[in-house]
Image 1 (cartoon, rainbow, N blue to C red):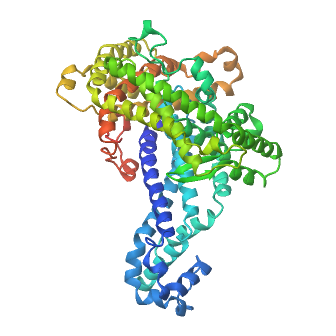
Image 2 (cartoon, rainbow, N blue to C red; image 1 turned 45 degrees about the vertical axis):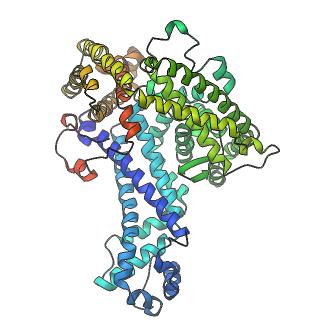
Image 3 (cartoon, helix red, strand yellow; image 1 turned 90 degrees about the horizontal axis):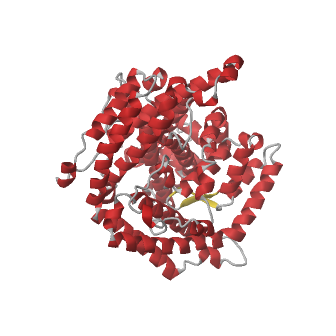
Length: 584
């Protein structure tokens, strides 16, 4: 536990995920800029620079500007201007390299800490771990799609050398990174070989959640999903469970985790039947995955091309072809039925909540689920309208069902408007629930724990104090609730507890006598209660805390930004659990 505490896993995961998103956006911007004739950097289109551009492309990364100065006359004449124009691109590529180094370091640290991953029990830690991996993959893929990256970096370094008499100190490493990732998937699979165990464990925790979420509309309809009228007697009962955050986790996000995760850690597909079944189920859901915005990858083609060069993967290639055929034949109709169901379900939900807005308090989970499910289907249609597969009935993929889609979008916007309009109703309900129920229950659970180390006790006590201090007056005074520090403390608590549980499990597995006499429920020693009762309670109050912040999120989605940098965390000597950090 001390190692996880001192390594600040929670803080690093939070900061790197935020940092990775920014780097990914910049790679997308650079790609789009270089492809647009109107936005393309001036020195890439200048006729006086044509010889320099061709020479740098041909000789990169070993550019001899002394022996072949005739090719670089244009840069020599405008070295200051070239350096200034290319500096922002060069710095962005430097940020990619720095991001890669920090991801390497963090993944190795997490492996060394022997962390335990389970999306249903340790939602925040597992989600952040998988998101970091997918963000890193996306950054590298986008980097490989920037066709002019060698020219941009090469021109900057030539201008730097002409101005200062030496190359930029980071140029050789940056050039080496470009060369390594010319075939990004091959290089990434080599890098993730040592992390296969952790990634596979995290992905396998989805085998209960993902199949339950990825159901056809008929089963949604028979289960009366999202209906408040199906059980009138329990209409006022709060809608909650031990896995609340999982209930509205995006299906598209889970598919991206599964397909890209198993692409890099593919060895488990041949050794673990559960991994193989989960992978095939995700392959049957669609042909394309979103990298960022309108950038997608054809996951079937990329996976098949890579597996084609490996021995012993002929069965997996056959699986990919079978799943691709299934998608082409069935996915259009399946998603059309889902959209039709959601249109009617959201219509009913909107009418009930407009008539009785007080139900937004206990039933806000239904709103989150409805919006999440609908978003997945809208984005699926948008994504596939640009990548229509050849079928006998292409209208299944391309037909927008204009009237029905307009209705679905209308009801999504109505739900959002209701949440904004009646945000105080949601806040009043959950403030009372947090202060008068969750805080008391969590406190009782703490008192009944057999063992609770000092660091964990400090965090848990802080949770109880924070929640107990909530009052209705804060809602009446229009205060905005900020639970970012509490959420980060909960992520810290998970990172500590996960290491202890994994260490205990490893010790039991390695001791045959201990394994014989120790029941599985006792794995984790004195931390069993924290992994079940306290964890479930804390997950529930965190979701209720999210409900209090919904008006802030809806009105100001980009208001909050991290206030600590990577270097602040890396070089900080303070203990993470005792900080009151304001990182989003």
